Image (cartoon, rainbow, N blue to C red; front, side, top):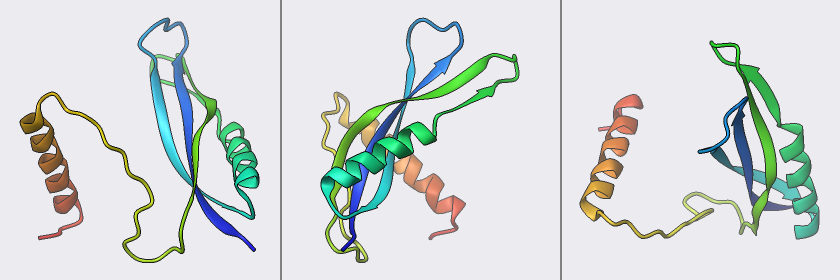
Length: 115
């Protein structure tokens, strides 16, 4: 019987010649597998299969290099409104953080024309 898992994959975005301040891409992937071990194996396969390189407008190579699978979580029965991921963090400036949240929410609402 197949189960669903949520995997967090980490990629390093590597600009040729850049030696510091690397960017990392965290991706959440839905994985179908019979067991947690199988989900981890599939997550790693997906990570390596999705590495790629492109050249930017300055003809510098940018590589998405798979780092590792950070987490794999079993998901409960998939249904409307279930929580699939949560992270709690501390913000030094609550007002600034909430302002950013509201601004992003407003942009989403405008983009999808939600009143």
